[in-house]
Image (cartoon, rainbow, N blue to C red; front, side, top):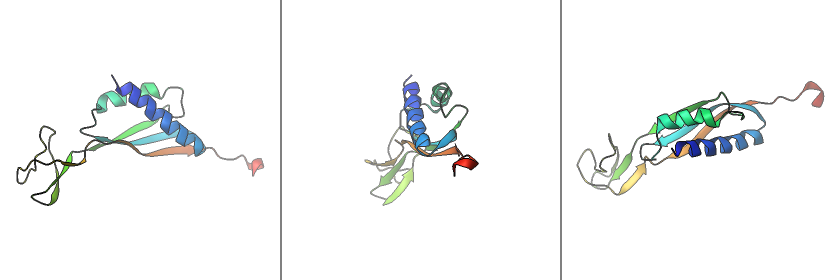
Length: 123
């Protein structure tokens, strides 16, 4: 299950960014996950809980935005979202496309944190 390694890398990256921003803890992580990324959403959610133990992210929520496969059709001169991942054919004209625009994403879109507040006497 490579999702555990992906979750661990995700936690490491987010924790580093959160610490640099002065976070007391991370409350939510927003992730874009493409249909062609090769990552199982359910497995990643399970592994995320395991990977966040004893970190700034423990107890945080992983919010995953599913990114559909989107191609550009040369014949129609338009983008098209595909309903499945079996073939890269335009749903309007049936033309095979070699221009994949979206669907391979596995990227952190944002994080939500609680910031460490300065003590009154330290200002």
